[in-house]
Picture 1 (cartoon, rainbow, N blue to C red):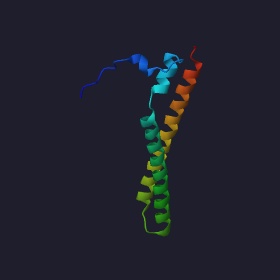
Picture 2 (cartoon, one colour):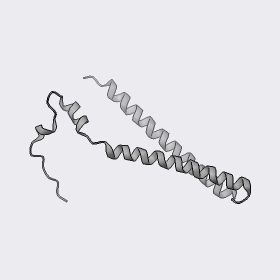
Picture 3 (cartoon, rainbow, N blue to C red):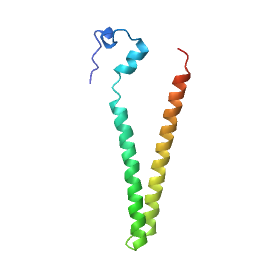
Picture 4 (cartoon, rainbow, N blue to C red):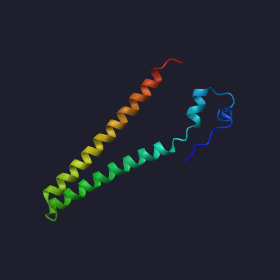
Length: 100
């Protein structure tokens, strides 16, 4: 798949904005937002699955092994989400500390 060259790079920058502000405004960001939404949905479904597995174990229709696997899956996905959040906050703080 060939990449088409940009014929007029100045057209991407809105009048009255700097290059850094325009490049941030020109970025779509939809894919990153969709990735974060998918991550949060995954964490939510893993937590729901863990709750169901524990309820099944409590009423006798499930086993301990399945419940423990579901709990571990939920815990690992939550830890991943927290680390992604920490990296995003750290990147934001690094950007805010940059001199203009």
